[in-house]
Length: 369
Image: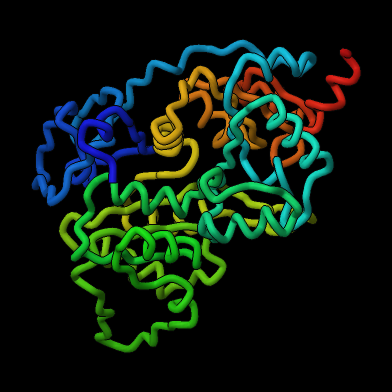
């Protein structure tokens, strides 16, 4: 566990905060006047340093300094210049390294080239269905030599976040998600319930029926869940609404994901959205574009954020993640985002550079050589 001094050097930003749980997870640097809400804090959060908020009644408006207009993204023409300007490359996985279980062309050669130049490589994914160890096996199955220490999944981020706020070990965590979250929580020493075993549970509605839930649940973690059902929605809702101080944590809010390389599939955001609707609350998001993982990585490896390039295929998660962290950003068009979407007048997120796929590092080098 990080020391209090080290923890204060890191910052965590939730996608949205609301007056129900901003009084639960807070920092002494943040001064709130919470009219009408009882402050309940049985653990503090040493990581969190938020930008200033204005509170008017129950509405919060975020005053962010990074909303300035950015120049339009430039096509990547000189990869050597970008490679030489940073020490570390952070890669998203789905849509950048692979699609479904199929490796994207040229990835092994590109990673080998970057390693040969002494670059640190880190792989970050919002997909919470696997633990870091399980992702290590996937990399291995695709012929990629990637260590567990180089992998950061949102399942790990959820457990790391709970450790960072000194979440009580005598409290339980209800999981709406898959095996990856359970394994990371277990490794971190937390008690949990739910997960895939609740996938077959049904509610038999009868007159006067009241669903029971564990009053000792102190957090609900929601991630991508192929076994999602009404039982889980109701159980998670009861915990968040009725258990004092219960946290609502999301691994990510991705609208779509790549379960196969044939089409896009509904992402973890659809599961999170159901709980948002039933609780009328917004979650604390630990995955991209929240800067929690960026801050964690920068501290763990001693990296200056200005020496990092974030490479991803999503504007609203990967590129925003890099920009929120103060990094250089490269969008690849091998996943979710199309060139027309990037250039759309409605798109306000502009990466520093864009290219077709990461193997363009090699092909463009050959052209410019």
